Image (cartoon, rainbow, N blue to C red):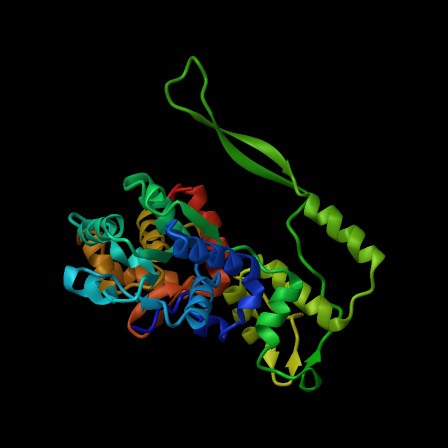
Amino acid sequence: MTGDSADSSESMNGAPCTVFQNQFEEIQDVINLYHSHKRENVAVIGLPYSGKSTLISAVHETYKDNTYLVEYESQITSKRKLLDYRSSKPIFLMDGCQYLFSRHIGGFSVLDDFLNDVVTSSSLFITTWNLYAWNYIRRIREVERIFPRTIFIPPLSDTGMRQCILKDYTDAELQFIGGVEVELPSFIQIKQHEVTLPFKKEPLMVPFPRFNFDRLTFRRQKSEETLSDEEMVFRKITRLAAGNPGIGKAIWKKSFDYPTVNLKDYEPIRITDPLIRKDAFILGVIAMSGITSKEYLEEVSALEYDINPILYRLQTLGIIMERNGGYQICPEAILGVHDLLRRLRIIWE
């Protein structure tokens, strides 16, 4: 198995683990405790493209003698395929565990078998999960009781993003186009909050203002420092990507015409066209899976939807892409998709 291409080391071009040093050290502590006969199974959780697979691969590289790595890249529908992780090594690294369940009748049987194996085993399990899948199953199966140590992948800093992207280049060969403005959300944003009134059965969604102090902080920092063209480019990439390395890498590729990096003409993907409910539902399934097949989407929809027009529409909007026969969200669209699905309550939080 080659891992989940929506979050693999390949997606980040093998970014070094130093960008996730704190999370790596936390896993090291868990392994040391395990050797001292205290077991805490781990769930590493993050958005697609956030670098979960990079972190787990670094752990495997460091502890090759004691760990066995399994990388799931598509839905596991049978116990036989699940058994691929069986090994004599004491520590199992399971990458892409969102593929162990499906959102249809009987779709939790493989996950239930796996969870039973975990609780009856003396081995240590270090797993990775898509954030959307984790938020879903922790309400369905209380997986936090089985994986009590949860590690969330954090956003990268400007320096971390630079390190992740530039590892394959020498400083002398690149040219950065300056004059790039860093875009941030407006100072005042409106967020909808659910409010229950004593005289109404159904809760109301009430708009409340939210102040974005990041904009004021950034303006102050900008006035206090003089940034080089390179620093401004990576600051904008980090802001546009919200610190997600896979998104940052995709923005870089779209702005890079060797040897020049020019973000002036980069246009972020904005989901301005309202999606109908069935489109949003299928988009939510793709987001939860990471990468999935048309056949799986047809199965989940119970053949109620004609999948082809939905996939065509989502591809035309630049929201999803097809890769090796599977469909996944385009990296640059992840943040917009996240906001959309949260607003429509397609995903659990």
